[in-house]
Amino acid sequence: MIYLSGFHAIEERIKSGLPCGPLLMAKPGPRARGIAALALQRKIKVDRVGTADLDRLAPDHRGILLEVDEQLKDSGPETSLEDFMENLGDRKDALVVILDEITDPQNYGAILRSCDQFGVSLVLTRKRRIAKYAEVISKTSAGASAWVPTAEYANLVRAVEILKEGGFWVYGADMEGESLWSKDLRGRTAVILGGEGTGISRILKENCDALIAIPTLGRLDSLNVSVAAGVIFYEVMRQKKVKK
Image (cartoon, rainbow, N blue to C red):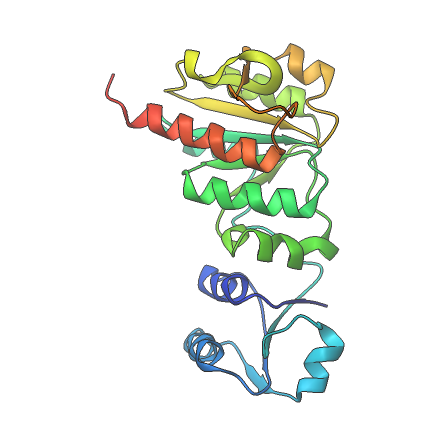
């Protein structure tokens, strides 16, 4: 089993309707009692335990833990790329994010939080995140991992082809790309983010319609991938809100 310990992570997991429980509590404060009331409302069992029991399970607890089956995935509503495309209908403003080997669970969680905030329609990965990182991802995402739709696709190059066939323009985030501000990012848009230190794989980069970069003024050579993700998603959202 794994245990969620952050208040936001626990609350959002309960609200999402994804399987979880029981909720374990020891000397709960007002915030924890409110979460317990929500759990009972959602028919999730609440167990009173000793502080030592919580210490043994998760030393960073705040008087409350939520049990999650380690076999369950660590992110929100799961779909397939094919189902996503089929259900897209005539929607013209969808944003898909493709993560090419993002390995740091804290970066992954932070990216999911930005995905939730900026209306990302789907997060596409080559394989599901390792279950042992679910607690880190959920906490870092402030619970957003329970909500953001995700899909796995073994061949990301083929996934890009499917998106293009469906009318998506595909942009790769790369330091050598053109300015983010110079691109029209409205319509159906897909953004590829590469792994920490490695960037986007060569073959995926070759299949992008264009490479985009964030104009910066600093002395360092690049932004952290999760920070870059938030900046890019915001610009995409901003442009989509501008009337054509």
